[in-house]
Length: 137
Image 1 (cartoon, rainbow, N blue to C red):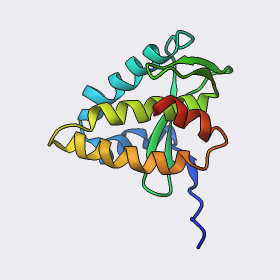
Image 2 (cartoon, rainbow, N blue to C red):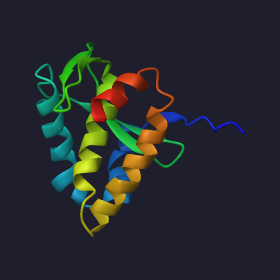
Image 3 (cartoon, one colour):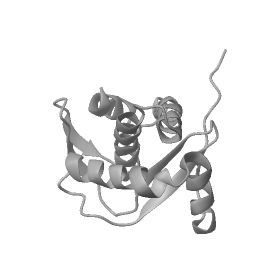
């Protein structure tokens, strides 16, 4: 049996708030977005802020990735050091943030736990899957 291909759609600007609110509620602005940006800064000194695109996955998953014209050198606490494309960096950063915020009993913790597993499923077929998994494991 083959695993269905998970498709990735960039969320139009006009739908960004609806997607974030539907998945995470107000906690997106208060907790998730700051956690993503802080994690990005922690994992790469190349990251200095900027615009992030929202990605909607056909399996129900979601992630954000920065929109730049470069790769990011990443240094993780687990010893992984390497370069990641913008997309792989966004996936990695979101997996870290989802994991960190998944502990608890509130709506955000549940949503982040679910999103972690959905995004990890998508990452398995990513061209940089090996690097993403090395960065998060």
